[in-house]
Amino acid sequence: IKSSRDTANASLKPNDGWEIPIDSIMNDLKFIGTGIEGRVYLGKLNGQNVACKQVKTEAETNIKHLRKLNHVNVIRFRGVSVSAPLFYIVMDYCPYGSLYDVLKRRREINSCTKPTQVLDWSKQISNGINYLHANKIVHRDLKSPNILIAENHVLKISDFGTSKQLAKKQGQIMSFNGTTAWMAPEVIRQELCSEKIDVWSFGIVLWEILTCQVPYQNIDPNAILWGVGKGSLTLPIPSSAPEGFKLLMTMCWNQRSVSRPSFQQIIKHLNISESEIV
Ligand code: ACK
View (cartoon, rainbow, N blue to C red):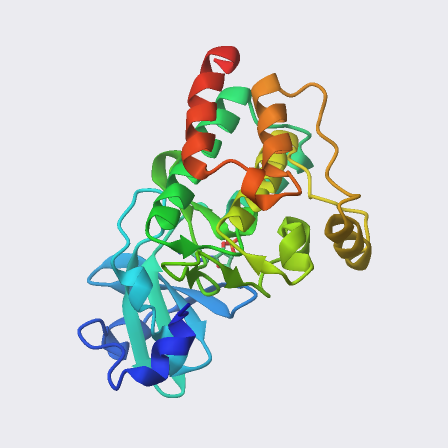
């Protein structure tokens, strides 16, 4: 199992052919916000808007396994800028912020997502993660703040700082990453994990889109860890939701990770559910 961080020292020039001269982005950086991993800036590269995520060490700019990715629902990496003590990962800019922000705005005006949009968004997210899994990448921190919105309501999976490449044979990783409310029970219990941890998190994101609420909002994080880790706590499935979505959430929150659907199966399920919803 190799993560970008593990391989950094093995390569003398980790960013060969992938480096963006820091001067070409530095002149005009505007602060956008701070994520768990670091500050994000809006910059310009050859006249185009780009997002520049500041990371703490050069090792973190070694994102070799992410360079080849090319999918409409996955954020596109443009390169890295390395000029100690400043290190940036440069990617496409998404002007409409995160899915979390959009759902928050809806919550504030007591509005919610229409079923056709729930279907469209959940298909886009599944297509993006399915592509990552086909490339043996587990996201490990799938949640609405890490899903960005580009033009024409195109969703882009982002924040791969914690993603890991699965070992080819075993298909298992140890995962100490994640955000409490979106974490699968086996992550909480610190067991060996597979790509099915992203399926659990997808169920939480589907719930967020459907309800426009924050998952486990009034529950203490330690109580979430305890309850989900023991298998006694899941989110309340709204009774008014279309049956196809209810079933999908139940399947994603199966305690046994092997029994959760793959993203290929999720995409099929969403296609079948379409007739019920549209
Ligand atoms: O919710 P936001 O507006 O969307 O604020 C956070 C902040 O940076 C810290 O993560 C925003 N952000 C991250 N990556 C991008 C990107 N590629 N395009 C636009 N905004 C981004 C994120």
